[in-house]
Amino acid sequence: MTEETAMHDHGRQIRMDLNESPVAIDDSSAALLADVLRTANRYPRGVLQRRLTHVIAQRNGCAPENVVLGAGSVSLLEAVWSCTVDPGDPVVFAEPGFEMYPWLTVRRGGTPMSVPLAPGFRTDLKQIRHLVRTARPALVAITNPHNPSGTRCPDAELTSFLAEVRTDTVVVVDEAYVDFDERADLAASAAAAVDAPNVVLTRTLSKAHGLAGLRIGYAIAHADLARRLAASTLPFAVTDVACAAASAAMDTVDDKVARIRAMRASLTEQLRDLGLEVPDSAANFVLVVGHHDLADRLADRGVLVSRSPLGVRITIGHEQGGDRVVEGVREYCAARHGSSKENQPTGRQ
Image (cartoon, rainbow, N blue to C red; front, side, top):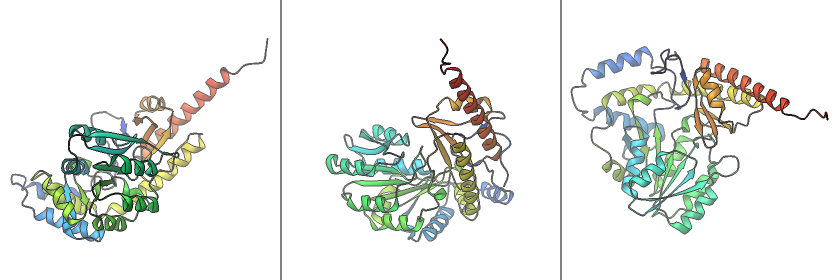
């Protein structure tokens, strides 16, 4: 695996702000896609789409009828909102969180109802449960692992929550980062969605599989709900190239994920050793709590990171970028320490 040498249109700056994979596709995958591109003059015939659907179903222990493909998980989230939210309907989600949730809600004429995170920067399922009972929302959106904190919902708590939600409220569990979660059981969460009439899982191949530029993702749901979602998606949205790349990427994702997890553990330890608060992350990023001005320090070193209301979010995966982050944070902490010493009273009259 090789890291990209050209970082988009930012010259030599390293992008660690969008939670992409920095690893370019390998030569064999590139050759495969080149063959598929020879038919780019034709609309998708559905052959590769059906093949990918069967691969996803087999990997998750469900039937193909439970799987819906989409042009990235965002298009699937749009389909969820489209078939569940009418004007005036409440939609509940954690805040801060994925910015698409309030945007999609307002776009559908719904009423956003945000819930602050619980201590430890976790999704507050207890408070969301209270709103489900009192506000009777049309839709609840849960990001697991959460973005931008990286924290995960405990399996037992999430299972209990889903079991208590009324069936006239749809729950979408956005698992964009689930591949990086060592404790996740993908087949078990898929089974929970398939068995419930009102639960949708959405997953993306933009993160762990490294296909952000090809826009490919999938949803898993009960067959009836899956048909509703499929009816809300646009025809020909999922391309043959994306499907071919996705099928190939699934064979190599485990090695990529193992690398990200190891780098995440290392960076978390180094940042904590420098005195920063970093919650345990189950995603391909870490959150430095507070210290929003750290983003400017890292930008000066050629590393772009993301600001959030919680602090600074740093994408994992680029080795050179990780080294620059640690160097920049060390300088940042030293400068802050020196400034605080200068401002201390001397005790002299």
